Each structure stands twice: as C-alpha cells, then as structure tokens.
Amino acid sequence: MTSDQIKEAALKQFAKNGYEGTSLARIAEDVGIKKQSIYTHFKGKDELFLQLCRDAYEIELKWVNHFIECNTARPIEEFLFRFLSQCKERYEKDDSNQFWVRTAFFPPAHLNEEIMRNVYEYLDKLEKLLLPIIKKAMEEGEISSLIGEQRATAAFLGVLDGIFVEMLYGGPERLQKRLDASWYLYWRGLSNV
Image (cartoon, rainbow, N blue to C red):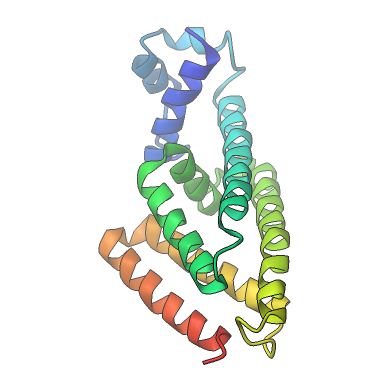
C-alpha cells in the first residue's frame, strides 16, 4: 500500500462526494486497508485533501500548458472553442478535474483560504497564458481589437466559469446548451463579422 493508492481512492471519493461527504473510513475501505493505516502517510483528512488540491492544481496547469503548446497554430476561433470543449470532456472523464472544479466552487469552510489561494493563482496564470494568444489574434486581425485583449480574455474566462457551473449543476444537456449559447454570443462579440 502506498500513499498514491490512498490518494487515488480519496480523489474518487472527494470528486464524487465532496469533503464533507467523504470519510477516511470509506477511503480506507476502497484501498482495502484499515483507517489507521492512512495516518502512516497523512496526518489526517485535511492534509490528504490539501495534497490532492496541490496535485490537481499542478495537473490543471500542466494540461493548460500542453493544450496551448499543441494548439497555438490553430485559428483563434478554433483554439478557444476547442479549449472550452476539452474542459467539458475532461470534466466528464477525469476524477482530478472533477475534484478541482468541485473544490474551487465548494471548498470546505475551514480550508477555504488556502484552497482559494490556489484557485486564484491558477486563474491568474490561466489569464496570463491566454492573454498573449488573444492579443496576437487581434494584431493579426482574426478578432476585433476594439474590445481589447484584457476584456476579451476576462470575458472568455467568464464563459468558462459558466461552463463550470453547468458541469456542477446542470447535467450534460444543460451543459451543452450553455456552451453553445455562450460560445455563440462570445464569438459574435469578438469576431470581425
């Protein structure tokens, strides 16, 4: 038994049930160990949860950087829509992403400050990574420069936030409807059409 097995089981439970709905006893049961064995690797539930938050933060940043690296040559319309679509797909299939989104919106009250520091750091880094891509698209005439790259990037993150909300509350049909409508209006406002 390793800490990785514990983290894997905990991630599934926290992603599905949140902090409050997950017990160390359930995590131990999923791993096939006694609850006390978890304390060999983690001081308690808070330490385990915060470690998963740090891991998810790193995974999300790594994914964003990889996405940008692999898609920068695409036209900006395709790049941005693909980003939103892949966020949706990842949420549907990836425990770490589900955990990250759920935790960002519903952090445990007693861990709120530490978790939100990571969430805001992630959002700030995401904005810094997207800003030059949107600026370049404006300079190349792919999108209107009247809006400004700061506002266009912030609005894109607003669309992404709306998608995250539907991931948590709406289900697949409502999510797709929100994605299609939000994207349509965002792109119409940004494009030179």
